[in-house]
Length: 241
Image 1 (cartoon, one colour):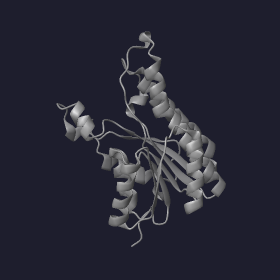
Image 2: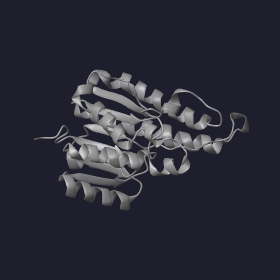
Image 3: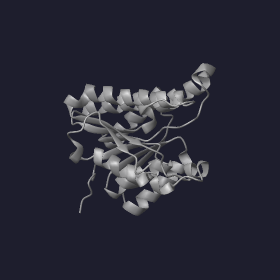
Image 4: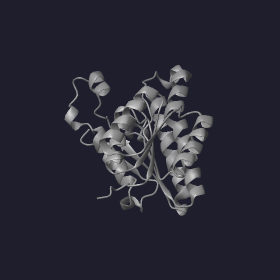
């Protein structure tokens, strides 16, 4: 039986991270052709070998700085040469760092968070959308953002602002391309149940956290035809946290 994404070309950023691996496996199980993007070539290679062996899917790996427009342009051109199209972008790249107060005026953490959380959404989303528009057959773009972007909090101004900025980019892109058959949406997790988060918060109730697999299921839903009526949605995936 054909998988839900059989023959579809799915571009996954941050593919070898804790969340990215779950997303990669979710689409691999459904028969997608995978373009796996990550800074670390060694981890990308290992992941590609794993999904090819376990699921028999085609993969393309590409070590990339998702904040570098020239590198992204080269990636898009290489995808077009290899597969001829992009059907889905699942953007999982992002990061967290606590800062000082706004009154402290720490621009280093501000620039770091904006460059990590907002800039790649603008660049990757825009470039993927341009390719989908050129194809003329629609597509799906899903960004992993964060609940923290909905409201500011003490000593997290740079992080929350960067996630809020990314959400506004997502909504704007959706408004720009929805009439051309491209669905742009986001998943907003709470705390994700990963080994680093468990190590940082050892006294937390991990059962309340959302798992990478649960987020991957939400992304797969937004990438499917079942979500064809959703545009500019921020899907809250919190579990009980």
